[in-house]
Length: 314
Image (cartoon, rainbow, N blue to C red; front, side, top):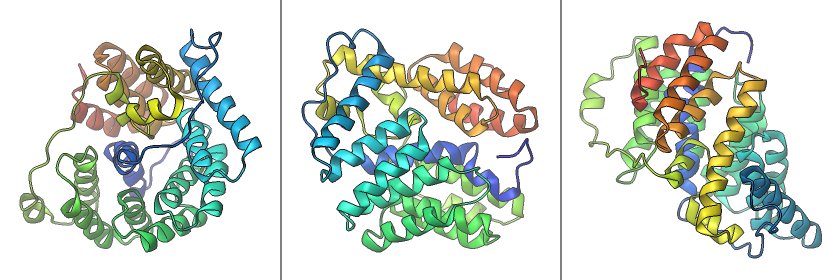
């Protein structure tokens, strides 16, 4: 991402659409339960949220060294790297999963998502697009792949086709899909920018039920990956440590943004997570920090923050 002019199509990877990146990742993974037992952190590590995360990654890496043919283990490692902002490493792990089980759509769409976020954000990389197309060929209803393929259309100047694809995704969305409102917002943004009339089509959509926005587990809607229940199955952590891990992941994202603040889409993921943890004041502070670091993107940041109900977003 350059410093800082957003092309029109980049709107599809920012603001509300950046939220959809997160929510789609959660929504399509929530019903899958990892089968990686025995990755609990050591007692010495469990006192620190970041240590819990690092210990889980180390445990997974050790298990995969001993058993490199464990496709689901590579998927979980890919998610763990993704969760901690190590997108290139995440893509490497997901690619291993696709090589071991090439007929699993979720592995391919997860790989594509990691490749997108490891890129400069100016386009959908070719290998990411190929991964999304492979996912859809295996599962035509893969929401994450469909979302990003529409983004690819939009970035390629096919704005109407992208909007049609997003509408089709919304029409197929299950009741209460946490990403539906964000996809709708992406439609609204692109339609407004490209002067495409979608009012009647939006009015005809089925009502979108709001996603729950409270509790530590809900914060995972702001950072892609499995739900807290899936984390429990994967890491066998006690409840208090699960919550500490979630908060540690959110705090880890905040720390990375302090070091590299010119990432408005990542700021919106942090702000969403803060709101889902009930940390309205911290979300408001993050918004101000995001604006200060990315003044050219103030309008998009504020618009997305308003949608999340961030205190003082104006």
